[in-house]
Image 1 (cartoon, rainbow, N blue to C red):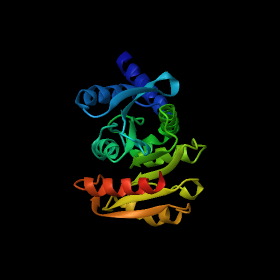
Image 2 (image 1 turned 60 degrees about the vertical axis):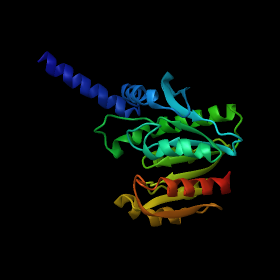
Image 3 (image 1 turned 45 degrees about the vertical axis):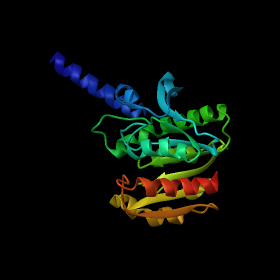
Image 4 (image 1 turned 90 degrees about the horizontal axis):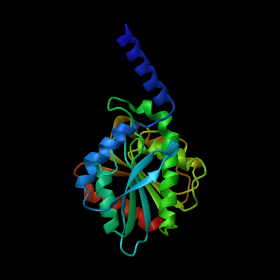
Length: 245
C-alpha cells in the first residue's frame, strides 16, 4: 500500500511539473552528456534559464559574420540534432554566426500537445539567446526553428521580441497560428512530402504572411526532416537570410 501511495504521489508530482511548463532537466542533462563529447565544431555555452536552470547552447562563430542565427530544434531532441546540427555548422560557413539552443524537452513518450505548457519557457530561452548574441556584438539576428520549435518560436515572436530579431525561418511548421500579428518577415519553408498536418495548414500559413519580404516555399522531394536534402535546405535558408540580414 505504501509503495502504491508513493507511486501515485510521484505521478501527481510529475503531472504538476509538466503542467507548470517545466522541462525534463534530467533528460536535458542526458542529451548534453551524450552530444558534447562528439561536438567538433562550435563551443558549448550555458545560458541562464527560467527558475535558475541553465540550458545548453552550441555557439559557432563565423569569420566576418553578416549576422547571427538562433536555431531551435523540434520535439524532444537537442541542439546538434539532424538538420539543426547541419545548419548550425553550415550557416557558419556561409557567414552567419550560429547559436543552437536546447529547447525544453519532456519525457520521450510525450506528445506534441503535451508541450504547450513549455512554450513560455522556450520563449524565455530565446530571449536569453538573443541577449547572449547582442553581448557578442550582433545587432542583426534571425531565428530558424523546426517543427515543434516553430510554435515555441512563435510564442516569443508574438510577444515583444527584441528589435535585434530581424526575421524568422519556420521549417515544417505544424501549426496554424496567426502569423500576420508578427512584425518581421517570415519564410515558411516545408517539404513536398511533409507531415499531413504541415501540408494541411500550408494555405492558412500562406494567408498570414502579410509582412513585406515574407514568403512560402515548398522544397521538392523533401520530407518533414529534409532527409537527403541538406544542400537544398541550406541553399534555401541561406539565400533568404542573405536578403533579410
